[in-house]
Length: 287
Image (cartoon, rainbow, N blue to C red; front, side):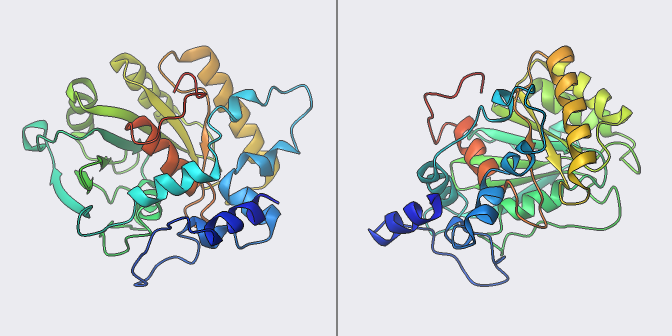
């Protein structure tokens, strides 16, 4: 039903993003996603709905649905990820040390996570409406060795950080920790965890680092298409328990994503637009 409602709104003249057809993913736009069967579209837009039916009735669902924007809000966010002459999206620069980091005024969001957790793939998915933006994705763990800055017009900047753990740069801590401590325009850190394996020791160390900086961050559960509902739910509930008992700066809701299947990409775009001040959702608390 919600797909029909959105289709009717689009038919009435809602402006949607116009994108180049160069290697654009078939599900890159919200309009394409809502043409799918309702159950499939619901899972793409709100991935938790796919898992909710498997949860015991005693489990509180509230923390998994704190950020639940409307389709109109997702459309507004989508426009920010569409490049135009007046709103250019591009790779800007890479940096190995803080003295190489550019001085930029727009708010920033950064993505950190274990090597091979899917950071670059996720950023590529976020930028799928602008395929000419070069986001290098490799099957080799530890491919990202520098802090890579991507400008989204004058709206905000996305920073792809080096991975930690296996094959991480030797100076990873010296590179990332000063950025988290001193970057004044950092609006949100996105800490990625592989949903197919759950929290690892290295993830806990990164979580503690985020807590020490006292900057707001959020957990993103990647590769949710790589395991069954049972293992994924177990890993998700373990993560939620850690968030409840060991964090004070973490947004309570984890974001579930699959860069391959595009689950959660639209919701994450909207959250980025929200935390950088471009979409104001008054009923969202603790965000």
